[in-house]
Image 1 (cartoon, protein in one colour):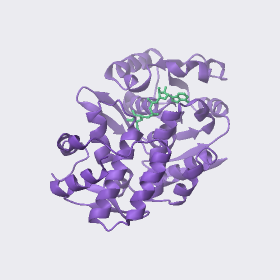
Image 2 (cartoon, protein in one colour; image 1 turned 45 degrees about the horizontal axis):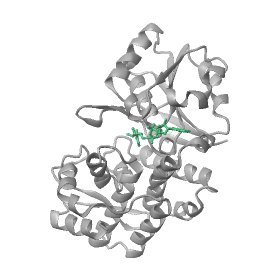
Image 3 (cartoon, protein in one colour; image 1 turned 135 degrees about the horizontal axis):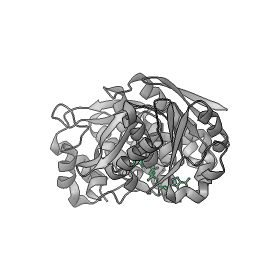
Image 4 (cartoon, protein in one colour; image 1 turned 135 degrees about the vertical axis):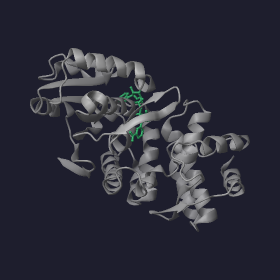
Length: 343
Ligand SMILES: NC(=O)c1ccc[n+]([C@@H]2O[C@H](COP(=O)([O-])OP(=O)(O)OC[C@H]3O[C@@H](n4cnc5c(N)ncnc54)[C@H](O)[C@@H]3O)[C@@H](O)[C@H]2O)c1
């Protein structure tokens, strides 16, 4: 079994398994009590009731972003009280990134922090959400504004889950894999060309990139920002589209923009920008956006929670796998790059 160790507030392993169910009984035996969380939409697929030792302690959640709510969280706190979940209990989140974000945040807040494990079932969950210790929910103020750094005790990745993942979600998750290729591991970009055949290797390599970065800068003081490559414009597009696009789809356009800015301001070779276009469009991910949206997107970027020091800064590339920080980019520079990526 392959595994990758992440060093955060504690060390934990990301295990790559063939048979996720077999991992659960061993976790149950380490704790006095457990609660397994999963979206109701995956109930038939998971057949959790048949897992040895689970003893009915399963709670089904609404699907997608609906589960990342204060209402669902408050319901879990009530349930935790009824089940007497104590410090020696464990929370297990099985589902996409929304489920592991909620499960992790619930575990962070119950008794000021109990142990939890992530079993990601989507590609975005495997290569991004479940690894890195960021947990959170959405509120009326915005998406992911309430959260905590609370790393799991372990992440179990079984790529067999991806057989039932809709193609659109697979491709959206692949945008984050491609991001890892451009910022750190160019071999990923070769493997992506035949992504169906290379899925396991791609997941492993993308997790390795995230694990390395997170281990060096858990709380995102500087280096971890490279994982936000393509995300500044991506977040703005997600907001403008009222979250109707998948995160990876918005990040795909954002990466084209970040690469264009890098060509304009950091000497990135035009060929690397073209490689972004070729790979992302091969996966049917969007690579352009509406010309008239610039002012609105600029407003959203200026309000981004990740904005620091009152200036817009972008993660760019000076070369393949060589991230750089583009500081204080001016509005005319942003506009010029934006117009070049519009259709
Ligand atoms: N914590 C972090 O660092 C981090 C990083 C990236 C994204 N996220 C969060 O992750 C979420 C996005 O992740 P996501 O795309 O996995 O979202 P998601 O959990 O909403 O899953 C997307 C859809 O796929 C379905 N699904 C999941 N696994 C499936 C499977 N094996 N077969 C069939 N259907 C399946 C889900 O039920 C859902 O309908 C967002 O809430 C985002 O904020 C968090």
